[in-house]
Length: 258
Image 1 (cartoon, rainbow, N blue to C red):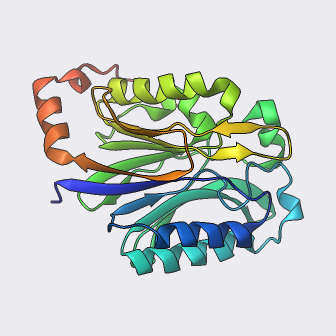
Image 2 (tube, rainbow, N blue to C red):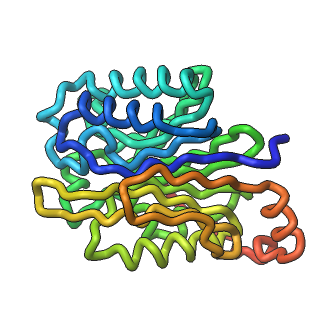
């Protein structure tokens, strides 16, 4: 079993509703990485920005991006993760893809659609969590607004990593910082949050603050700039801390209905 997981968090501006341009810029950024990694994390809706007009996109764009993620994962022998507007069976979802180097993939549809922006009117909410096994680590991926709902994030499967991709705006960035740290502590897991930077045509400004916290809430990486943030996660540290501080043994036992 692998004892370390090397991750790259790509915090970037996004071209508004221009999937091809965004795919190219992320390909260029990955090509600039100086070290090999196991996992590359991209923001929420990384091909478009946080659009509430998915019908203006080519309906095939989601599939095109999945194929692109598969090709990039193979090039770097690393898994890719990020969300896109996805059209299927006459509905749209905010779909997060996790793509392995061999091209196999799994997906998670954002559970908590952001009603303040009308996301619930455009995108169908997901109903199932996803727990991934990858290179010796168990990962629970989620999307942006999910961060505000701790019950949905509860560590009932003893996952090692809780991961959020986001377009989280600057006016509420203090909540992002606080909740990422809280989710790490309460779930005794690494917590990763990848945000974007820049502005969108709706007047929203994004200040980044992509970060990684360990299971005690210690910050392992942080940036407010357009950058690639590299962090290594240690299984030995996680297991030693959980063995010494057995807080997960005292969890409340209940289930959440879909």
